[in-house]
Image (cartoon, rainbow, N blue to C red; front, side):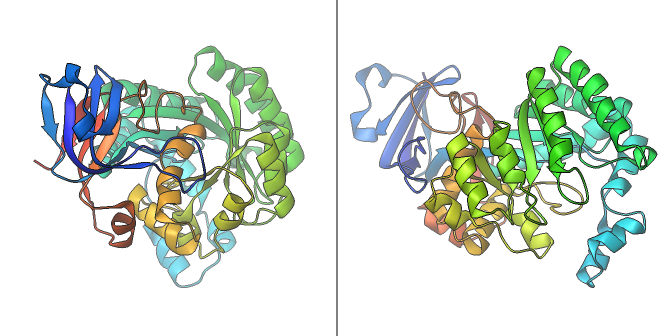
Length: 407
């Protein structure tokens, strides 16, 4: 039963109280058995049974639950740096898409990449991601947009989950947009998703969730309802990209379908917030995408005050959020979404765990939870997210073993 001592402050981030309640313990210690936390408290109160166990030194630093990035598009072919230049010069996304850019550009590159190429690229990302204190990451398909390549992406995630230490949570996003071969046959593509992909993915347990992009340029509420309900029939819990570019009533649909989360939400209505609260849907905010797209930010302050659970994630993808730096997204949430550092930390731990239905096993530092934690070189969460550094994480632990350290 290893014991971690000399912790300046430990934030338990229990899922109770307000979003700002992160339950700090100063001069803390923590003990775990195998991969489960056994005890957390003040170092002066360590139970006698831990006196002769192996001791690790936190160096007086801050300890937090392992961060959870609950919305990413990890596997994709190519990049879109040329589009970034066009966006920087003011060219609208719709015009870029008409020129062959956007999601369909990444779709083409992803279809051309084989599974081994995608795995190698993802492993490079994950090796850096774990250094940031992240221990769990959700990964969406959605750049294949046909049977063969959507399944390829989900098999890539399954393989990744076995060959590196972070937990990979897979989401099926075949309904990301309509592929060019179904441009004039939208019903045909929806039928492909409902009658071929969803049953196969469920049978082979390739994903936990079924996601969909609800927007004027993607899927309508009526189209999304059919696909989400079909996924639900096969045990794939609903998720939505909702109200990102306009108030498309995606939040209301998330509540109606019992979605686990609705993500983006820059244009969510008060009625959408109310209905999501009543249905227990987690709001996932993506400040990096907001920043890159020069949009109005999601109204996180209002959502919190109206009682919603608000998570914070990166939306890592090659177009609108080409960064997997979750601490950067967390600082950005404080600045543009008017969230306090404490609210953001809870948003990237236990609230993010709830957005993945993992709150019973991870996301907080409590007895019986997974021993997933990170050591941050900062005296407090306020100082950490205010005084932004390339990386303040000095060690990452997953399932009770150290998977990265600066030493």
